[in-house]
Image 1 (cartoon, helix red, strand yellow):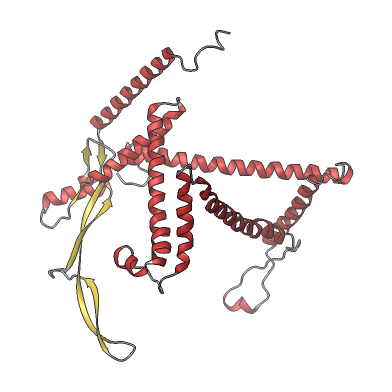
Image 2 (tube, rainbow, N blue to C red):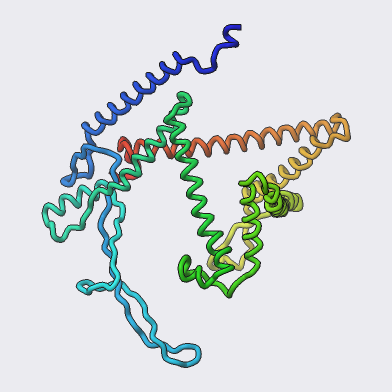
Length: 375
């Protein structure tokens, strides 16, 4: 009974876990400091330098300038109008509009640029460290390690990373919904002139669309769920959203799943493919592609057998004996192969994501590997 009545979180266990977490963080910081002291060899040949750091992003200055050009043109009614166009400024020409772009370059290009600026400072392009992008790489690496720390146990670092991911995702999708839905489809429908002038200059609208009041009203009713006294008004927009979504998904599933699979049942079981001919032999009778024909015919037969056998397995009005039982057992094999392939595909997708994050840690952050030659 003492074990059953013991607290779920033993304070002594918690203290030991916290001390272990502090030790692990101290070891990780020590390894990072040692990695910085060892440094990395950047570039090759005479441009090779040793950089005592890692996880840095280098950018190159690329100034942009444009000048306007006015040309005469005629409108549809025949009147002469002036058309202003913009073109890149020529060397030595003062641009009317200018800005500077910073394009990301490799560490080897940075080392070569440092050598070129030492030899000819005036003509060499400016290549420097982008501290905001470097901070982004470090932040992404630390968040990745924070999420992976859950493999040890649930801890405050993982909870912090989880909260950051949820908060950033919510804010990102709120901004996307605002500029992709609310502004063009609601404000653009009800006040198109004001929306074009202040929010979205690229908006194309034929005028006020009063049907925009419908989603506006449903949205206002949905906000009533925040109040206990009038929360019942929020049932109507919820019912509208759920019903509309169910109807749309029903039609999509019928077309993509049911009709698409039924259509495969009407494919011919014997498929004859011919090899493509070119040049002077294009008018002759092309030879049969036996490998392709056999593969396509076998695929059609397997699809037909799979559909009929799986249907026999789920046909419970007859006892699964005799021919029906044999077909049902074949259907079980089809189902198990399908489930196994689907599970394997899902696992491989997750493994690919893990491999991408590990490559980011060892390549972009720690500079321990360089598969693409960036260092």
